[in-house]
Image 1 (cartoon, rainbow, N blue to C red):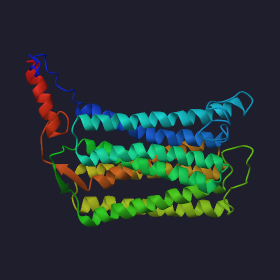
Image 2 (image 1 turned 90 degrees about the vertical axis):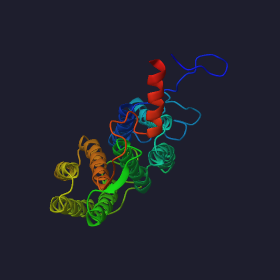
Image 3 (image 1 turned 30 degrees about the horizontal axis):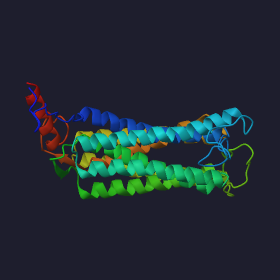
Image 4 (image 1 turned 180 degrees about the horizontal axis):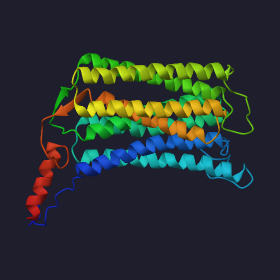
Length: 334
């Protein structure tokens, strides 16, 4: 029987989201953060970047696409990409609400808030890139924060599984953790030079723009710079995995390291194929999607360096406070 409130009516025990639901929501947020970069690349390779030629309206005086204002397919792709931002925002808000209701620790709340605010920032940057007629450096500024948000979402997903009352514990030496930071910096350089290759390439984002507003460098040289940086990043990752074995790090860290190496090699193969095939349109969304995958695995490898151990075992919500409410609810319904 439920306990009575002050006025004698049955007192409702608040609903507390399970740890499983929190992790599913966090994973969906990670998927949407990576997914919107893929749809953004589809906007670019189909020349739909100015399918909606202003922002926040689609066309002057109209929030939605208008017949004859631009090719209907370009309008549909660009407007659809804009609508997807609301899906990402909804995912971030959903995770935020779940974490609050489960009484999770501040670290997780901060990750969810960053994810939500990042969606707003990205919408503004995307609007500015439209007003700047898709100049390459604004498009690059629009893309790079998405990779940061993928990193944050990946950290949120893995940290959600750790109990709030666990003790932060270093699982491998500080040297390896420093190496993971250096590796992440190398990854950032790879991503930045990748946007420069794209900026010098044929896919401006709109068929009428042509090479106006493009990065005026030799694309062959730029592609090699990007590739060499990728090899440096791969080398650091291989060194990290070797150190993990040398220092007898936990098995999950080693497995994540091997998975990251595999993802880098796949991404490298896609990039090499792009170079040799002349950057076919189908390859760009695939390359962008793998960028998010590599960033996520890099974040997970970094996260393995310090985890919360001990604490409540078999926790229902990940939070002692949340588990207390679950126990009260179970007792009330008994």
